Image (cartoon, rainbow, N blue to C red):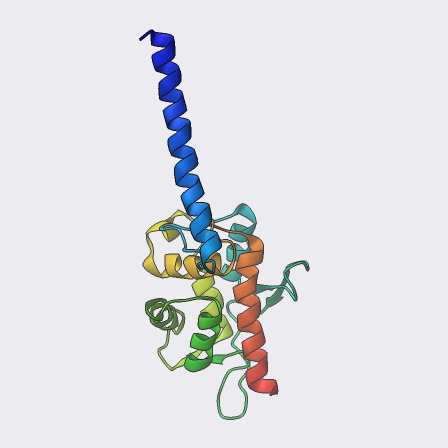
Length: 190
């Protein structure tokens, strides 16, 4: 057999194998419901989301009213205390149960819900305040976040709720922030 024919046979074999494995995957996807996207092992922030995490480090929470709307920032400086409501609860605070329900809506696993609740609730009082939440979000910024289990759990939940491509975009970052802000408002206005 000539080298040219042998080479063509190898290329044809590779194309056939690639087409066969792709067809199997496509038919498997069509046969059942689409599985929820799984997050990457290491999730990073897009440059825009890095900026939002930096704003969190300054006590600002990035929010948006809908996925197509602009991201805005609202919040207090990190040195200001949250105003107290009747009963001693801080405005914008979310109970442990409400926070875990929020995480469930974002597709968090039971382990992630426990890890994130414990990580955000810095004073372990069963309530996640605005300040605790933004400080937790600020931990996701920078290269150290790649090796921080808490930061990775936060980023994986954000990414899973979005497109699960291994990078948290600004809209994915703002979606969790917006949900937290809304949950905090419901507690003291409802």
